[in-house]
Amino acid sequence: MRKLSKKLLKKKITENLVFRDEEFEKYGIKLKEKVDSIFGRSIAIREVDCGSDNSIEIELVNLTMPHYDIERFGISFVASPRHADILIVTGAVTHNMEIALRKVYDATPAPKWVIALGDDACNGGIFRDTYAVNNGVEDILPVDIKIPGNSPSPIEIIKGILALMDNIKKQS
Image 1 (cartoon, rainbow, N blue to C red):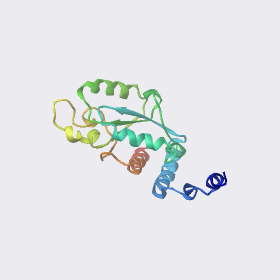
Image 2: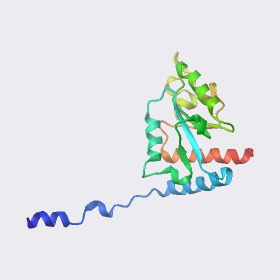
Image 3: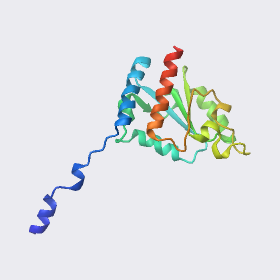
Image 4: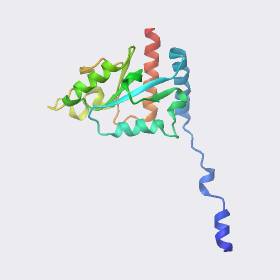
């Protein structure tokens, strides 16, 4: 009994573990300042999967998890394009998804911006010039920012959103 209670009361190894991504924090704070100055509120993003391999969706979900928690910087993901300010399109746009993507774009209120996220969305990726896909999102919609990579890390995604904020500020 004594051994058991000693083990239970022993200091755990994980108690001293401190993990903080300083680079992500730096870009996140910059992003929050830009979002506040441009929009005066948070911004909503609608993600549209047009034939991806889900690696990019995993990174987007990582952004919403407690480790990164992008919502504290004024970015939220929404289920409806009617509530979105920004569309993030992932995957090489298959011919079957082309009409659906146009409908989502049309349902998004103006002003709206489009981000092509990942190599497939930027230029078709490994599926470029094949029978089943369009060669990137910009063949279908006007793209404001391209974030290449397969798959881009959360820091690269936040840098891309920050670059979009800079473009929006220049346009207004």
